Image 1 (tube, rainbow, N blue to C red):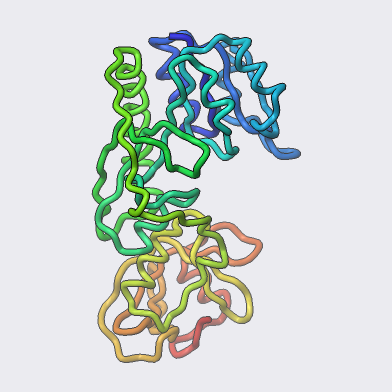
Image 2 (cartoon, one colour; image 1 turned 90 degrees about the vertical axis):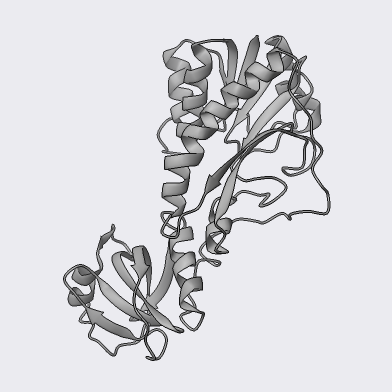
Amino acid sequence: MRIIVNGQQAFGRAVLEALLDREEVVGVFTAPEGKGAPPDPLKECAVERGLPVFQPKSFRRPRVWEQMRGLKPDLAVMAYVTLFVPEEALSIPTLGTIQYHPSLLPMHKGPSSINWPIIFGETRTGLSIFWPDNGLDTGPILLQKEVDIGPDDTLGSVYFNHLFPLGVDAMIESVDLVRDGRAPKIEQDPDAGSYESWCRAEQAEIDWSRPVADVYNLIRGCNPQPGAWTLCNGQRLQLFDARRGGETDAQPSTLLSVGDKGVEVAAAGGSIEVLRVRPKGSGKIPADEFARSAGLEPGDLLG
């Protein structure tokens, strides 16, 4: 089949590389890089392979549709896209367009669909390959794969250990189903799930008065991005690589101890051991190293 790949970053590159071993890729679409940013990994791969590369600022423009028609594609494969693609573009390939989304649709529609299941304390997530339409992650389902969320999993471990490699395989499996005429279109339940927007700094602020499980889930669900944070001496401090501590009746946000490998902070009903932090203007450093350099002592309050 003649395939267009639309995507970004390492996942987009991995999908392209997998397709190049078995399909005729006729063009690659990727979002423009920001000023001074390095080339996108998907773009780098396309250039290395001598493929036509297109970087439209918007897919709502008829000029972009004409570029797509000129490639005479059978199928478009959307792998990690950030620009909205309207139905005028989605319907150009003769067999349509399929898209990867890292959740079990209709649950967790939206751009931070890996963060939220972890933050909400869920024990299962997954990925969907679906047929996109003019809605936001609302098109019919082609294929889904489930993934367990372990009690100490983070956004990083769920994505890189599971949803990334499983997603590449699922994309290839879906392409095979489309080629063979066996790809289903299972309508999503419009009354199930909801759209959840970005998990950004505003949503990643730690409220130490929340139950300790909620605090822990927020930290691991924001690790590595956007980074859960609290205030320390009036400055924002991001927390990473945490683990559950023991029970405590101490006031939430109290620094309980500074050990050899981290610091322990009280939340409601328990404590959190934090192993790495990122102070403002710095990279990630051991939490105990930061505490000593900042002059923190047991009994100090964060937040």
